[in-house]
Length: 215
Image (tube, rainbow, N blue to C red):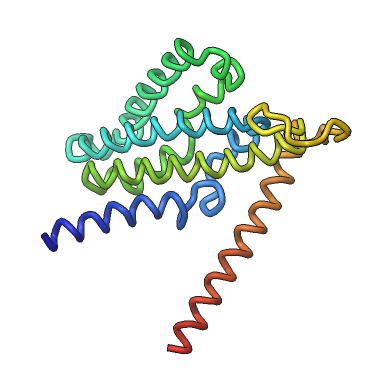
């Protein structure tokens, strides 16, 4: 029972690590190409994030299962084959069931093959850990990426179009900020969000240090 409880804590800690502690966007600063390129609308962020999450989970799981079989000299080509297979799957599924979203995301779906987040987790985690932990890592990292780019997308859509998920939020008199629908708007919004996130992290860190000092 104690061992099972310890494993559950480990799975949870691995999941939360990707979701919060080592968030791909706000902490590791990975996957910047889709983060800046597709986040002009909230639905784009959700679609891109969930597609990446699917590839992360599946590639992490399979690479972990094959970690003792893949020769070290060819591990990178092997990773590419595994990742490309799942990217092709999600691309075909989106073309079949979500053609409008697939048309908007375009080549960014195919570029998941070379996404730094996928390779980083394959090399640093999945290749060194058991399948269930690797699956948890992929889920945490994927959802962390999804949440961050969806939040970025909501802000850009709000100020760039006056809506969120296509629902009008701003009054009719609001004049949309055209720059928010362009790449510079993505840089500006991401920069402001990073400042806010780092400010919150520092505040929580200082608060924890003060509590430890008082104890």
